[in-house]
Image: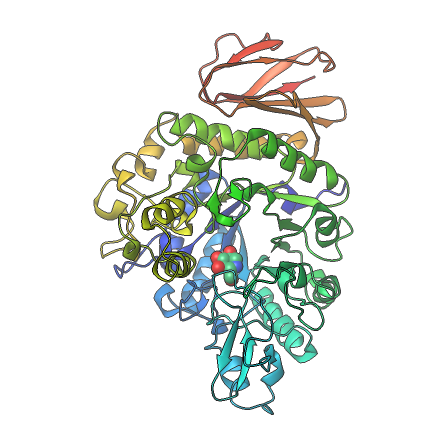
Length: 558
Ligand code: NOJ
């Protein structure tokens, strides 16, 4: 397997709105990020993935872009951006920008032109269709509830929006549009950025004829007709030839609904498309047949099966990304760990579990502090368009039970991850001197960066150690993965192998003390404890270990 810097890196994701506010308007900004680079350097990360900072009317908090080559006023200026990049490079950190090109904002000049008339040169930059018998062109639902089509009174046609109606889908079939996108990417890369995280990039090719979903419902999930569509690999290979291959850069594609077979193409080792993708399979383990908001308990056996499938199916063929939360997902310690009695232990355990797998690990801001989910009392306190649309559809229009829907929001809502970063125990957690755009989680008096930096046993320093180990031991990056103790109900254990070394990782995913019994087929003569989240007295006998609640250990065996 080829060695690459982006395989050896650890990425830190910044959601700029919630990271650090430098000017007291209650909204995080670029200068705020620059002011915290030393904190990130201390943590040891290599790359920052910056969620969108481009001009945007913020229907979906920056994922609706109205100008790809200008900065959102609330976040600062292009000079601030240049300064951030220079300060990052001075600290040896790389910058990966978010690239949102499945759709733009309806306020982008392309769309403003496109909706002017049927013969406008930008008309074909978007997906317009006449209605069918006075109804939408097909029955697809949007990711954000309701129909994926919006009728335009002037033009008397519908346009497609897989997300909000202010996020019209771009028409990738149009080569002029593709060229404009490649030119824009080149412009950013020539500025010196080091990569792109590509938003829902596997949705850019829609099936010919845009067929209705077969379910027969008025509105139905049409994913099979727009996820991993017929021309997606052709487009990505073209993008690779025209842009990506010309730079020493990093790419990760967000790919809902991609199988490992798809991933082996998107993230192929030959490098003709992307470096890696984000899968969602492990994020769907707590969703019932009704989808995301139909919450069900997740099972460790399912987590083992999904992670093992991705580790083994991509082995030698493609590269994995590793993540347990981001700006769209709840906080991992609340979802997969225990944010009550074992918050610190379980945060460290989950970090061990993830960082020791094969792939490039992503840390989402605040994860290194063990930040938790939040529960706001009223629906008005939530900001997220996905939450608001779903609530309107289910409760206001659909008469579903308010409390039941709120419970689902508490578990799955995206605002869980978007509350401001808790820097210290002062008002608003030190995030802003103004009124924060989204309420701060009230546990900031106990959980914050100031306390974490003062406490050598904090989650922060645990991440620092994990990152350091990755720099020291090739096996953590390149070793091959094997699941052990598959049937064990409480423990997730695996090995990594590189030449004659083995890494042994054991994680108790429960609050119940559970015995780890080393399988006999693992030979070794010496064992070294690399990292652990509890005090360990006698660590040399590893044949049988009582793992305390959420205890995890990683050993190097020789
Ligand atoms: C995925 C992004 O991560 C999410 O935040 C956004 O709402 C959708 N794509 C649409 O851009």
